[in-house]
Length: 85
Length: 179
Image (cartoon, rainbow over all chains, first blue to last red; front, side):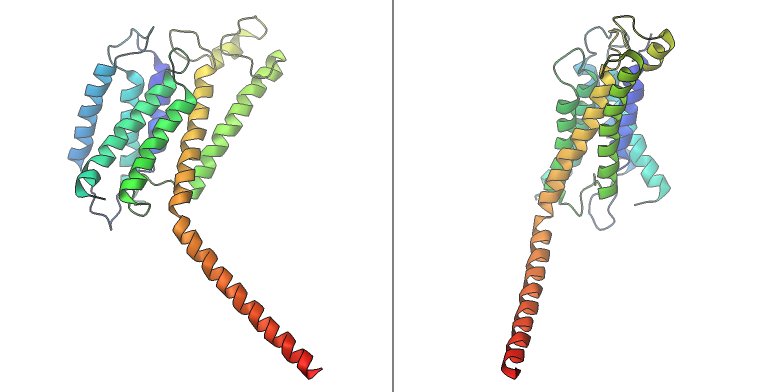
């Protein structure tokens, strides 16, 4: 059974920070799709090696970490799609 | 800053932010919690501001955003405390677990956090404190990084004030001579 507390609220916290991630047109830094894919893979590796907290025996990875990453990526994509950058 | 730092800073900041989120959600069972996790998230934001500068920083907190999140954190904390006060008579009573059997079961179900440790509302407090700390510490660094602009602005204002005062003095002198 997946415990929903860290999944839901981790996503929300990631979304709050991710919604402020922006591409500056004057900057040389560009966030492409490949960037987000690599970040997600690295986050999966970190979450796997972090492992779950004590008493959380639902999945072998840190659900708060991975849902925070998904929220952050989702927030930045929402901002990108909404065209506010 | 160097190109190597600019290449690595933002991906590293993303990982730091996610580690901060993880720390917030372990606050009720392990060392960590709202303040520590919020400080880690702010660390990621501060890293971006230092490396890229405030103008080009990929994670950019506006004044309205900082104000809104601060308000949500503070008012949410007080609100959760008041729920305990209203329902049980004790401020900050853990209405998500109700160890003393003071409140109806449906209120316990509303505020019960979904995890195996029966933590009640403690994770919610951690989240709210984390929100408040992450924008609070970021706001300090954002304010300091804008210090040069503020200093120039104050300098210009002072010069204008001195000019006006000198002009007024000259006017007063001329009046005295005239009188």
